[in-house]
Length: 553
Ligand code: C2O
Image (cartoon, rainbow, N blue to C red; front, side, top):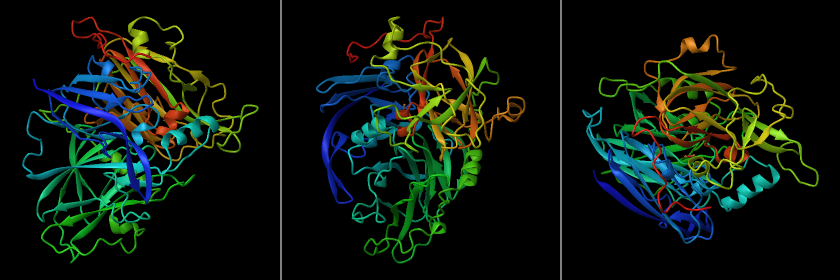
């Protein structure tokens, strides 16, 4: 097999957006960062050198890291951070995976600007190989913050505050003409009329799920989170942070004299706290047509114009999610576990805590925000959990007693945010699973403070979303309605606000794996857990030993 080698220097670079110049944390001075493009089956080696005065790590989001958990990247879960002046080479094999993924920093909020596309070309032709693809184009959504994101995170930790809002959404690092001072910072994709393009869409935003559409053009979804889907046409897509969606776009419209069509992304939020209503736009520009000077769309908030759902369009989200199905063909069979060994119900909560004496709190009603899974608010330890596990040194690092159901009855409706989830434990509790366990997690939203879906991301494994619904999960009735034929396979699921999602995993990758909300703010508040998959009995069912250059704490 081929080894693909990359060098990533984590370094500051002065970048200007919205007429605001600031030092931005980057890889190799690029924003978004460099694209990694490899072939299925390749070995990958990325030498990451930390050239800044703070710690960092890089995570290969969605890459399974079979037996190579040491290269997964989340700080204090699978490694200690790479310190200033140090290097660490992430080594792994891209086994049985193909499609669009992403990489990003996995230390504090650094992924705000330290992220990029991770593209895996398949060994076999695309299942939609009858379509001739003119070009493949990464489309990365992000958020631009005028403030320093570390300062934003520190504020949240200190005051239990939030929600915090960035200054602009971006398409490939560019806010577009609806934002002040940004007309020149507009993403423009040239296309030829009649040709079909593959858009590899990545949501690298910190805190928002997004709708995306291109005026008058249909998008055909063919792949999500690097797994093929049954193709379907849609006027727009919904994409949560950490998710990827590959679509085909045919330039089949008749443009006017400008030759331009607007593309736009804006957040999905329910109406409880509509704290953001901004939209990033770019253009699809047909070649061979004379282009007028770029000018902002005349009525940017005319929702219909861009096929974009309303900000509060939960019905669109529900329908779009239901349309996502595994390809489940003879060549790409769906490997959903038909039976399970264990069901773990995880209550996902945003909570409020009384303000400790002598502190100032800026959450809600003078209290602190925090978040929890089954009343456990996750505290990242100051040592690597994977290392502690590997060397049998659990003392003071983690405990193996993550509860398999919520500690009290829950109800998603009308829960008092002040009393919900009292007795929350702040600590590092882990779920331990024997190798090969077929596990079902029912991820249950509980708190009315939740104004958007929680994109829950699982490291080290893909999962199948066998069910999704509103209200409380009903163990007597809901499993009968599961899709065990062609459920979508992903690494990040948007758990509906006021509802639940059931996911099934074959836990066959030995190591320690993080599960967390991919809204960075919620991870900071503690909306995370981790699970250990023990070594299996077979010769290739054990975690490999740590690499010699693994950073030390
Ligand atoms: Cu994309 Cu734990 O992260």
